[in-house]
Structures are given as structure tokens and as C-alpha cells.
Amino acid sequence: MQSASSSRPARPTEPERWGCLIPWASSTHGHGRIDLLKPKTEYVVGREQSSCDIWLPWGNAISKTHCVIRWDGDETRASMVLVEDLSSNGTFINDAPVKSGNNTTKRLRDGSEISFGLANRARPYDHKFVFRQIRTDPGRGRGMYTGVDGRYDLLSILGQGSFGTVAQAVDRLSWRRFAVKMIRTGVVCVEPNGQRSTYGERVQREVEILRRLLHPHVCKLVHSFFEEKRLDLVLEYVPCGNLAEYMRKNGAIAESQARIITSQICSALVYIHSQGVVHRDIKPANVLIASQNPISVKVADFGLAKAIEVGPNGTPQMQTQCGTPAYAAPESGLGFYDYKVDSWSLGVMVYQMLTTSLPFPVIMGRCVGRDQAVVDHTALATRNVSDQESCFEYRRCDTKSNLCVTSKGKHFIGQLLQYYAAARMSSREAVAHAWIQAAESQDSVPDSETAAVGTSPPRLQVLNRSGLRLRHNSSPRGSADTVIQFSRSSRGRVAQTLYAGKEKAAECG
Image (cartoon, rainbow, N blue to C red; front, side):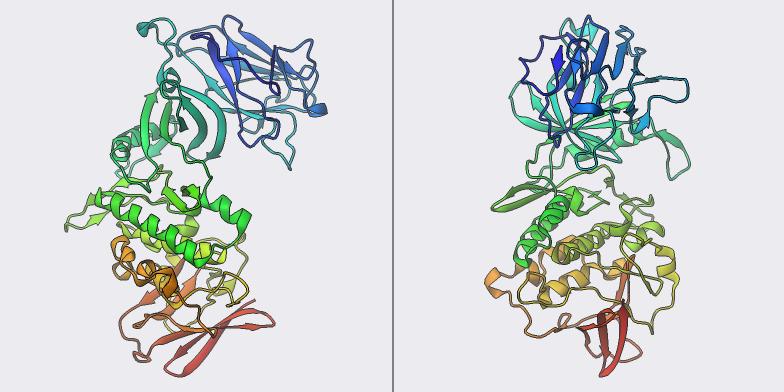
């Protein structure tokens, strides 16, 4: 009998496993991986130690005899694993109950998440595992697993997203830790030319592109294993979580630290762009923290990355729309685009690092909460906004907090958030920007809440959750500097835009 809460003996000698249950690393139970060993094909799961093969002593959420996991014993790819639910609190596969009417059995597929009992909101991962079906390769002899399992020992689940599940693993040869991203590849996609292909075919074409990326601030792809309906990517293990988690725990990041992080990301973007690759999903969750003191980050999750294509006029461009909407450049949904979609996303992320907010709280002139907002790039692109003002949600300057942003920092963000890609700062230009180049001792916080945005500022046209529209050409009101002044009203933050001495204000309640 295996216990999920006790210390476990050494891993079994190959090829005894036909499968395993990999726990979440964030589980408070501290359980280890549960191996399903040959020749046994049926495992009873529950909290009654005397009658169960897998003992889960986690209170009444687990039934005495909770479920049975059965393998048909087939060593080929046609093998099948079934789960029979015998519990009162339910067994779930990918959050769907196994029980459905009179049917108490459901197929458990490789890479699926299995949950025992009702989830505890305070500890949602305590009862969850990811099932891994393991096959041997008869052509390579006894003890040789196929794919990633032939070399790496998967230990615990680190995270899960739309593109797959990430597990912590150990290389059996070097005993070094790695992250393994497990991707189901059977999903059918429609290519830009209308042809249908599986997601795996699309990813496989791009794996070789990503493997050649070698940079200190890019998470390295070490190995890739492509099998039927499964792709496993072995990646460099980055131990300190991601930037989104860090900000959720610690709030806004001091400008000096944010500048170091941004400088490293810019360096990575310059490199990947020079290799003909666009990331297309730059956001805090895709920036991993390698160390906190000194701060060092790595750009990761190239699930949406794509090799750039050259258009008929010789300029780099792409057509497929993707990315996280809150960070996606306006042009990403309007046709051809290029490397500068990453610049826009970086601008949104830098703003978020400094303020903990997304920069676009206004939707078609109506202020809404971030959780209610929707992105409408088309409406933004076609709307006549030349004489309208918007809410600019930099936090008020407070000398007792780290939310003050220097004029160089504001100018840096503004140059990245140019609505038109042609006017937007590239990653190479961003590296050379004064904010990135300036030493910490040269930073100064404005004494007042009024700051000019650069020496030759663009005119503010619109600020929307889905896009900040700026232009450098002269405006009908003249070419006077645009100044953004921050103040507070009873209804909320107010951004006042001054055009050559004429003041107008927009309020965000």
C-alpha cells in the first residue's frame, strides 16, 4: 500500500511502472509521487488504510473506499485506463465528475488531472494529481521507457495553463532539476491559409526555432519529446516563481527594481527578435524569477512564439491573432503585424509593475472595473477620438510609497504604448532609452504631481484599456508640449491634459 503523506522508498526499478499520479507542488499535504506498478492493474483509492492500495488520510472529504483505477494491461498505444467512482463526495477528471447518471466509470487519459473529493477553496490543490501513463519501448529492451520518461523523473506539478501542465523533474543522469511542460497535441487548429492541422503539428514546426535560442534571460529549451497526442518540452528550471505571483504577494515594484527587470527583458527581446522570433505573449506570468537578490529574470512560455515571415514588400509581418487580450497590441487583431507587438506588451507590463494596475480602464468612454472590461481593438482603431480625453491611471505620487514614477519612466512607457506600430519604440530602441541607461543615482522623483512626458512628447489622443493612442505629428491645436497633471476628486482619479494652455479634464469614477 502506498501512502500519499508518508516518506517513500527509492523509485522502483524499471520497467515496473505503467503509470503514476503526480501531486501539485503547492499541496499542503507534502505527499510524493504515487507509482502504479506492474503487474498490478487495479488500485483502490481511499482513506481506510486496511482496504485501500493508495491511502489518502485527509479526513471526510475522502471516502473510505473512494474510487478504483484500472489499467487493461495492454502495453501498446491502444491501452486504456478507467476510473470507477465509489465515493459520496465525487471523483473528478479535468474538473468533470466521473459519475454521470447511472454511469460511474470514465476514461483517464495521459496528462489528465484527477481530483479526489470536493476541493477546499483555501487549499484547492490538496486533493489533485496529474495522471501520467508510462509506456516502455520493446525495441530498446527491458527497462526503457519511451519519451521524456526514459530520462526524466517527474516529481510534482508546478502549474497549469491553456497550453499545458508544467511539472518539476529530475534528470536521472545528472540529477539536475528541470521543468517539463506536458502538452496535449490532438487539438485541431485552422491555419491562416484555411488548412486544418493539429496543434502538435504546429508546435512541432516551431520547437526547433525555440531550441536555438540561447540567452541568459531566456528560459532555455533543453529537450523535446514528441509522441502521438503528446508533446513534452524539457525546460530550464527557474526556482523563484513568476513575476505575476511576485506582484500578487508584494504589490508594486520599486522603480529601480522594475528598471532592472525591464532591462533584462529588453535584452532578451532584442536577442529573440534578432533570431527572427516574436514572443507574442509577453506578460508577468511569462517572466520567471531566477533569483531575487540580485534580481534576475528569464522570459519563458514560448507557446505562442512564432518565426516571423517576410511580407511581399520585404518587411517582417505575421497574420495569426494571439496573445493575452489585456497585453495584446492593437494591430494584433487587425491584420499584419511585426516584432513591435512585443514592445506594446512590454509597455503594459512595465506599467503594471510600477502601479499594480493595467493602464487601460476606459472602454468606449465608460470607466469599468478591470474584472468587467472587454477589449475591442476594432472599435478603438476606427473611433474618431482626436478631440476627446481619457482617464490616465498612473497612481498619485505619494512620497511614502514606491508608486512614484519618474518622468523618464513615464516617457519610456509612453514610447512603448504608441498606438501605431510605426511610431512605437522597438526592443533595440528600448535598450538605449534614457530610463534603461540611467544609473540609480540619477533617478529623481518629481517634486510635484505634474510631469512633462519627455522633451518632445507626443500628443495624447486616447487612452483605452485596449490601447493608448499617441502620435508625433503636429496637432490642430499646435505643437506645444503635452503635460499630464494628476489630481484627486471626490469621484476618483482625474487626468488633466493641457493643450497649449487650454485645459480639459476627464474623470474616472
